[in-house]
Amino acid sequence: PPAVLAMTVAAFLHVAYESAAPMWVELSFLVFFTLGFAFLHIDGFAWNSTKRSKQLVENPKPRAFDARLRKVIEDETALGKHDAVLKAWRVGCISAPTPPELIKPVVHALLDLEPEDAASELLEHIRKHAMVLSNSRVACAVLDAVARAGEVRTMEELWEAFQKDLRIKPTYQMYEMLIGGFASVGDEKKVAKVFETLSESRMKLTARGYSLTIKGFLKNNMVDAVLRQLLAMNTQGIHIPPFAIVQFLRISCQATRNCEAFSALSTANIALPPEAVSLLLEDCAKRGDLEHATRVEDLAREAKQPLLCGAYDALLKLNTSRGHLHALELFEEMQTAGVRISEGLCVGLLS
Image 1 (cartoon, rainbow, N blue to C red):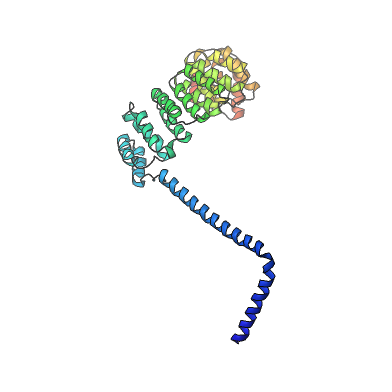
Image 2 (cartoon, rainbow, N blue to C red; image 1 turned 90 degrees about the vertical axis):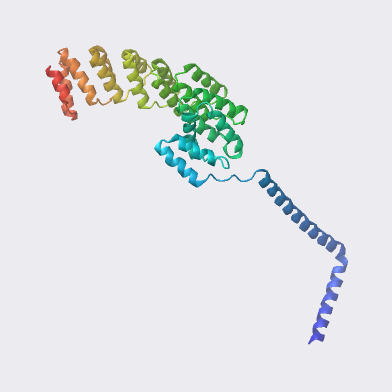
């Protein structure tokens, strides 16, 4: 009944009051502490919301590059239409940063059509979208494209602007792009200067950096410069790719420096791949130099390198022309190894 419930509630409240009366100070502290904590939490939430809103206003999320224009650039790049690539890019870059995968084709198009203004236009675009584009990754992509095109002046202009204007800290990957660009035009002095800068910055050139340098010097048939890089790699214990040795010996043979190049590599204990041995022996056969061919053969056998068909052909021709019995040993070895005897070799031996 309601009368009983009212009496029960009244009794409960009376007991509660009698029990809590001596602790009114503690209860008051607990109430105010709870209210204060709640107000601080609400205030902090409001401040964080304001901060996030301010950041969104000051640094709005960049817009994505137009998907249709991206497709146009990709398609026209495949067709080699640089004018269409540039036209589509200039429309899209007004409101959005260039995606990383489109940077190289855009740079190639700029260098092909407007090489004089390429650097200034690229830098203006990067400044406009600095939050997304002003970083070492983008700088590497731009420098790589410019270096491969051999536009050293533009590369130097961009390098200076990246550091002084955009405040992009150089990385060893960026230095590698710079080295590759200088090497591609055969500027060994500037390559050496970058090496010094790397050393002063306590950075070590990687195998990729050496490979880019060697490729550039090979492109310019710089025998001595390539040899210095090969010896430097060997000294530092970096694996020398076979292509570098083969191509070095190729330009050495073209410069009639076969013996000198072979001597330098063998002195440094740089192993010759089978393709390099074959190349050296073929050059010896052209010049009729049996003595040097014998040295090359001995080194290859000492290193237990297999002889290729071209190497056997060259050795057979040289030894047969001199009437050496070693020609018979080579012939038997070819049969045992299952090396096919070419028709050209047969004709050469019979003649």
